[in-house]
Each structure stands twice: as C-alpha cells, then as structure tokens.
Image (cartoon, rainbow, N blue to C red; front, side, top):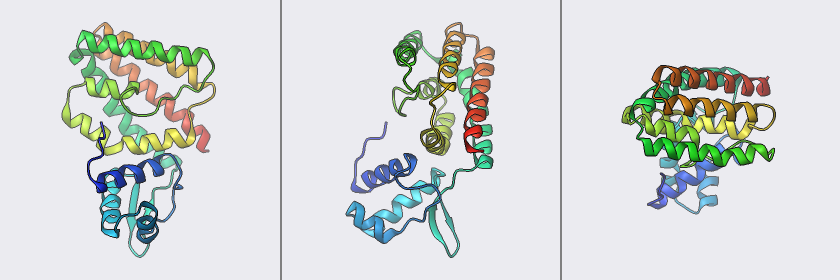
Length: 214
C-alpha cells in the first residue's frame, strides 16, 4: 500500500516507522539537523516528512518548541478510540453489504492463519498492512472517504498505541474470538450486527490498552 517512490517518500516512511515502533520515543523532540544526518538527506526533505507526519497526527508542532513526537496518554487514547469505534463500526456495517464473497473468503482464510498463532500461545498481533484484519474490513467498506480518514488520518497513531503498549496477554485469545464473530456477521450480511460487534471489539481493546497506561 505504501510504495516508496522518491527520496522524500522513503524518508517519510522510515521516519514514520521509527516513531510508530518506538525507536524514536513518544514525546521526544525532532531535530531537523540530527535527522538529516541520520537519513543522509537535506533538511528540506526532513521538513517535508515532518509536515506529513503532522497530518498523520503522530507529530505535533508547538510554538517556541518546534516539532515533537506526540506523547501517549490515557486521554489521547480515549479520544482516538472513540473516533475509531465510530468509524470502524461504520466500516464493518458497509463491509457486510459491499464486500464480495471472494473478499469475505479471503478474510476468513486470514483469520484461520491467525488461529494457529493464537493456539501456539504467540502474541496475537499482526503488523499493519495487507494482512491486518482491520485493514481488510476498512477496505471492504468501499467508501473512499472513510478509508482515507482511517488510513491517512488516525491509523498510524492507532498503530503507535498498539505496537508500543502491546497486544500480548489475556486479551489475545478474546480478540481473536471477537474477530471470528465479526467475520461471521459479515458472512451473514448482517450489517447491524457487524457494526455492533466491531464497536464493542474496539471498546474492549481501548479498555485493555488503557489498563496498561494507568
């Protein structure tokens, strides 16, 4: 989904991944000079990357301070997940109507491959991208405004909370079961149930991460 094209794109993606995965700490200041040395690009390229990261909501600029990585906080998480619950609930509702039978079959196959990981006691966490369960459903909504609001708008920040605070532990198997029920509702073309289950699933995730933050 993110094919790096120019040096600016490559820098943006590398910097974004460093932030999301915590190699650059949440809340830390971003120095254009240091980053241009690290990535071996001009400060103008770094400035452009920082501007793009700001629109992804993972970097913020403050007067007299400059750009810094957003800090992860319980309040920030609550606000983010309130939006996510609403938007992804809508995506699940639309997916139940708009996904093709083939796309639903692929989604079921994806879930089956996750089952083996859960059974083996491995952490139920998938890296974002084509394999991510939530991505498939959001794409399955076939609503380009919704897809853009989630992917380009808030999803990198969602990933940042998920990656840095983790999905391991008792939540793992229950998250898998919730995913299974959502797929079943989509398979049955039950839009109302799919929305309700997705909203509840995200609410449970929020509670789990919030518990780790407190």
